[in-house]
Image (cartoon, rainbow, N blue to C red; front, top):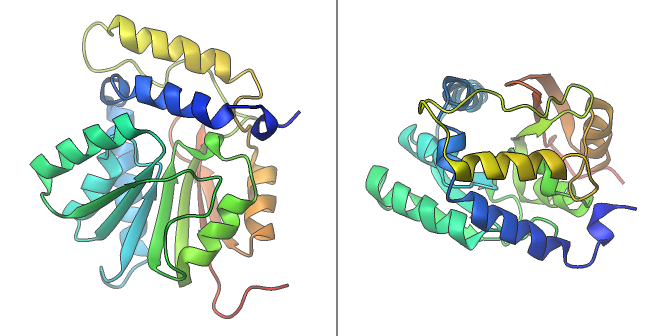
Length: 236
């Protein structure tokens, strides 16, 4: 049974991420996460001659990647399913880069509220387990400009380690963080999330018309995939 057919699955995802918004910044307060953020900023810069055009942050969470990209000079449009995540992201962005990021709620298994070919690049970090339909990747193709890139970080089921990547920098993790970790570990063994491998990720992106340029380890248990929308119309 595919998780996308489970009744109420989108509400379950929203409830989970609303709750996780209270502990997300604690969970990502690690050297490993900071290094990954720097790598992503650099990867976008290496594939861009300038900072014109918008970058989409699909599944922006509390806004860490969006803020880093805005500081690097990009126009950022950030989307998330969770109202609580967006609330925290807006507050952080207003303090760090006021007026630089446009936030909007979106369900990634429905049409994206973005115009055709409106994005220079798009990224989806640690949210691809919530994507259960081909529609998302078809939508990524639609909203990217020809030559634009999709940057995705996903947990590879063949290398996935359910232990935490690293402990938060705080000496003792809060009970909330530990609770969310336990829930995520259990969900990772169910069909409530999408389980990706390198082969299924590559196949899905290519079916959507994207050209996979790179697929490499990112941080523990995850891989970074970079796929490009080719010039010209989508192949039939």
